Image 1 (tube, rainbow, N blue to C red):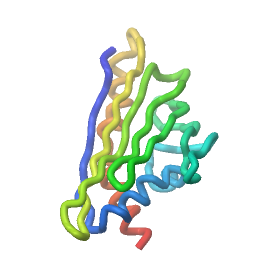
Image 2 (image 1 turned 135 degrees about the vertical axis):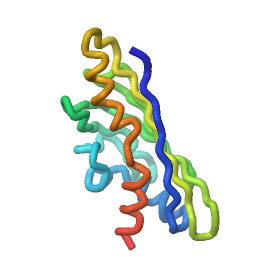
Image 3 (image 1 turned 60 degrees about the vertical axis):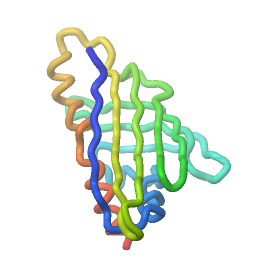
Length: 149
């Protein structure tokens, strides 16, 4: 099966630093990102941010468990790469943030997933994974930035 990739974008009426603070607060992302059901921090970087974490994602047919490594480039980027998983052959993604005015930020969420060789389950698995890959995470981030007032 080929790699599933996608992105979504939203313009948020808040400064880039505020949007970055929410995107970089990955430890609390399961509270507002509907497909990310759990995140357990295993290691932190020198700034106290999550560096390595175990995650659980709701892929409709089943839960997908992955260990991921985060990287931060304030205030423009938060990325993650899969370190290990029994459920996937690969995954990476991230948030790209662009200031489009003094109080406006364009956020783009990208995700690329390699579900591995799944044989006859390829089509049902692709239908289950595609909403996660092509989801509404950018809109969810916009709501969370506004909610944090």
